[in-house]
Amino acid sequence: MTSFRTSTGPKNRRLLALALGVGLASAALGTASPASARSTATIPAHSATAGYVGSSEKTGNKAFFDAVLKSVAKRQAAQPTLKVVTVYYNTAQAPSFRSQISSAASIWNSSVSNVKLQATTGSADFSYYEGNDSRGSYASTDGHGSGYIFLDYTQNRQYDSIRVAAHETGHVLGLPDHYSGPCSELMSGGGPGTSCTNRYPNSTERARVNQLWANGLTKALAQVAKTG
Ligand SMILES: [Zn+2]
Image (cartoon, rainbow, N blue to C red; front, side):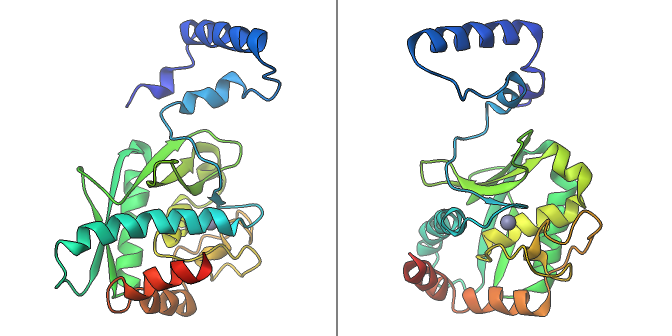
């Protein structure tokens, strides 16, 4: 879907206004999103999310990590002898951020040893999306058990874009948000402010990911069951 950037053109605005009008007539749609927010129509619906800034929503991150793990587990079951777990991602829906996503994957791959991130153009364990959302970037699930990461244009101009991608990718590997942490922590996200450009997980974060993915998926799955 490369067309959603132009989907707020005059014609679509009229259609949207018509649709909203019909909606207002038939139901109280007082909280309908503004037209500009509808340009992200191809992005899956979501409820609980784990954002780059804001209040920590543990349930959002848990649901996301759970979705990624289930997908990995399904694939891993076919190749039970694999020691290092590979998590596949697709960037087809986030074309503007391919280089940042690739950098974020390289950063994680050079920082941890028990799990690897691998790009694919085919079936993936999770996907990246891009667009405009007033809540910024986040990790979420689509309501059908698939995890995805959303990268917000405005936020990626305000904050270091590779840090944003590396932070969101940290959720893929099972790390929760910790906004009160220092800039040296990747999972402090937007907490330390826009001047923070650290793109690497600190030693604690690296150890936590390695521990979580030790012995394949066993520990990661147990962790999800425990926090559920
Ligand atoms: Zn986050």
